[in-house]
Image 1 (cartoon, rainbow, N blue to C red):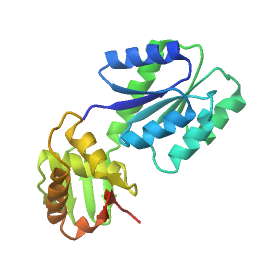
Image 2 (cartoon, helix red, strand yellow):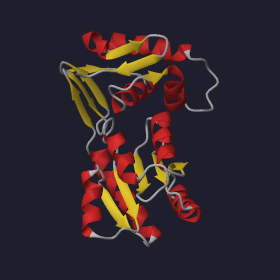
Image 3 (cartoon, rainbow, N blue to C red):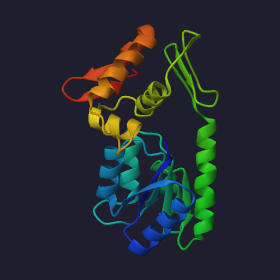
Image 4 (cartoon, one colour):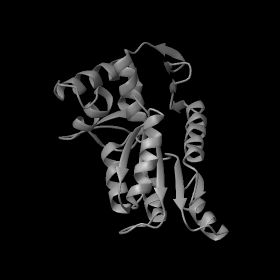
Length: 221
């Protein structure tokens, strides 16, 4: 799965330049035009890897957007703003931002910050949940210290569920984000793979919860 970046800026020409630079780095980019749109796009796509977020926007500012997203996700957030004071920078970090770039900025520097942040995040990819261990660097899954053999698609499915833990995901969302938007199969594919995944995870499979009439959720209390 390609790295997905959400870019939210109400200034069209700035947003388009950011998008072009990121696409040149082979990132998948999703655009949002204001604060409400950013929230909608984030929860629609679920598996966003990084957010570039302007602060001064219509409908809802970047601080509010970050606070809402932080209730559900630890996705890295880079703030962009023309507000260059120390107080505004501190407010950005307090709202859940991980980095802060003042306008005007060099687009090459922004891309370098994005690459650096994603590299740091990718190093920190070991998950532990009540005896279930998933390590993406060494590409293994263990249940109570015993290796579990998953197919590539079962592994992608498990990672997608984990990266969105405690969030109800529809079958359609899972299908789009794990199999891809151009996949022509139906949603029963998701059910089949969930069943196989649960069986392989043994008693840890009960963390993959069914949301009746909707989809699934990886629930960790």
